[in-house]
Length: 207
Ligand code: AMP
Image 1: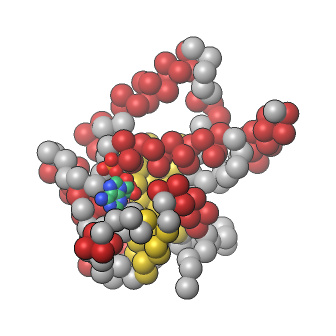
Image 2 (image 1 turned 90 degrees about the vertical axis):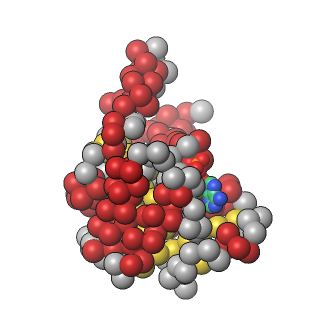
């Protein structure tokens, strides 16, 4: 059975979590990943993620599973069977490529969370932000700002705005929080601004 992105009549969501396939040096970040996994499970949400038990991916999904949560792993078939089967998830979805994985996660999620991670995490987070910017979707994405990890990225976005290359005002779907519980609550409360969506749609149809 495939998960479906929930409609907004319930407070439980399908949440894609993007995070490092490695463990960071800071134990606070790993602990925040476990806290987030537990909070997602306790909230009755379904956690979707990249499928393996490596690094922060394993910390988050393992904590959610231990708490009795539903976890869906979405993993490309080019990974070895050892990696693919490394985490005993509730549901395993095998896809053909990294691009297909991102497409699947975006289509089947109501909200997204990027924990600290490397370029794979940023690639996934930016895919969501670009889809929102183009009006292709209107789903919130939270950045878990443990140890101010995402502060330099926010500065980069501000620099893009100063150069007229990006509009932070249109990024109302971007939620930044240090506490996993608070981040989850803000994603649950998020209501897309229909006017912003229309502006993005008009821009898209012009080109
Ligand atoms: P990174 O932030 O560069 O460590 O990449 C982590 C992100 O890329 C995760 O959210 C995964 O979706 C994907 N990814 C990278 N490496 C792996 C791996 N060995 N197994 C599964 N997914 C991975």
